[in-house]
Length: 311
Image (tube, rainbow, N blue to C red; front, side, top):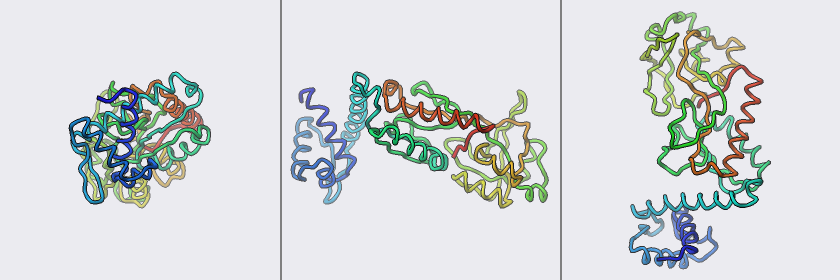
């Protein structure tokens, strides 16, 4: 068995090696020789009695045992970092690695610029921004803060409400002039609707609520995408009706290039939340970043009637 003081060092070594994917790349990252990396891994495997990596000529890959070690090592190292921040002056000065996940369009248009401002205020924080169509599974230790839309996922994570967000149905006036304006949800079944494939939601099913009555309409159309900006551009070109977040289409509604339809009906909630694992409640960098997001969107909410794009 290794001593407790050597365990964090071994875990850090192995996480670097696993992320680099080769002995030579890990050697450069650790500023040691390639034989030194190979020797240290062999010592770890001999001590544990299992093979952690499968070697090929150029690459290494994790074995099932290596996957388990890697996942736990990342979690433990993050908890050690948080603990050290909790008991040190870092509470007043956030620092360390912050992994942020956001959806494609929203992350590109809104979160990336905010990160630029955030790191200027907190230069000791290193931010990794990952953009994806779907949020990472909660079971994976893949993020420190994830910007999500709709209801908070579940009790396994902390979720702070960042901003309200409404999805609206709209279309170009030219399309409505040719095909008519829907009066009730069922009218959508005879019209072209632009599909957006997002998350785990049932694709092509639009839920609309009036009072206590909710209708689910199976819509159709010959255009679909996983990018909201593309969907809006198709709607502007007169291809059909799109369901988009208010922030994304507000300027087109004001200019008249898009017209809202079925305005009295509510769509599923799409409020913005900053989601993070419970173990990060005491993390100075996570708290500072979430506070930064909340302050920004609170200001935005006071300047506009609605908020924001959900892709």
